[in-house]
Image 1 (cartoon, rainbow, N blue to C red):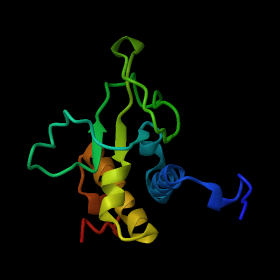
Image 2: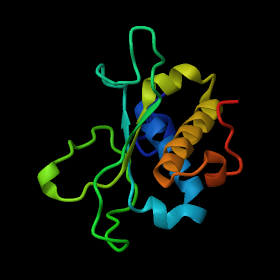
Image 3: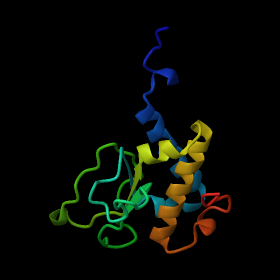
Length: 149
């Protein structure tokens, strides 16, 4: 069966995963819009081999938080959240860098038993990293936070 490109069935797994990250951010926006506006979101297939959280016997990370560099003030929060499969390298000479939450697609997909569970797992990871940026408990970001249960 042929499916037109604008029909959801035509979306690749990677595109559907990107959509899950965007949906997770959208779930947080009603309460946290001002804080989210200064944060970038990215998706990478797998964590880098040199990731400090991974070792020969260590767990595979599901995400990474890059704190960025300080901005000029509250009005200098940068663009709205965006998801990108290929994050741009940080350029120290380009001025302040916003915080970035990087979500790893393959480790998350390997832990989920279906699309619904994957969506909840992605949401939990986004909540955890966002809470780290704010310096608060993930349950304070979202009362429905499951915390890996």
